[in-house]
Image (cartoon, rainbow, N blue to C red; front, side):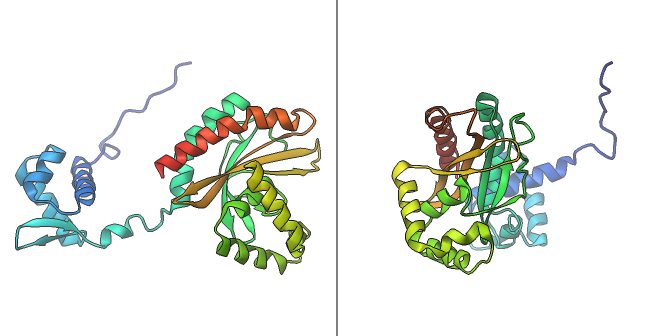
Length: 261
């Protein structure tokens, strides 16, 4: 049965003027300061059309005009457009197709996680894509920081002040999953070992099988922003095989994300 293809109606057809306005605003934001002629040439619009767009944006408060040279500049209002879109959200968006492609290769579930208080917050996941996910770690899931590879890798590679603050927070927790933070010497040994081997590792008992997780940091400007983790059955994949097969491809994905950031 052929799938029905919806044709655009008058109510759903894209607003051409809005697209043009966004093009002009994006180009001005990139240049930071520009005259009308430069912008018109860049967005391939007539000068009069570009002028009307700029004046509309100026009336809305998104740009201003310097009357000394008639150049236009973006205002602080432009920052409000990205106020709800942080670095972690940008990372998750960029990671989605990369994780999906990698999951097709290794099959086991992958996830990107960032710190959220005493937990790691799953920002992107292939659990729905992977037939081997023992338990679902969907987007938005919070997992304890010290009992999985993602949290251990993050603690090992974040800045010392941030690490101290997180460990102090965890040490005051009554959760069984956070108990390790109360033994600072043992925790420091574990984090040193994580840095030495270049990845975090943890093993947990699950309903079906013991699960091992491996994670590496994703860094931005020499600080850990997130971690990339893979989870697999310890009985199905020996640790050495997982390190040899999974980590090189995971590092390629992490490097790609770091370059994009």
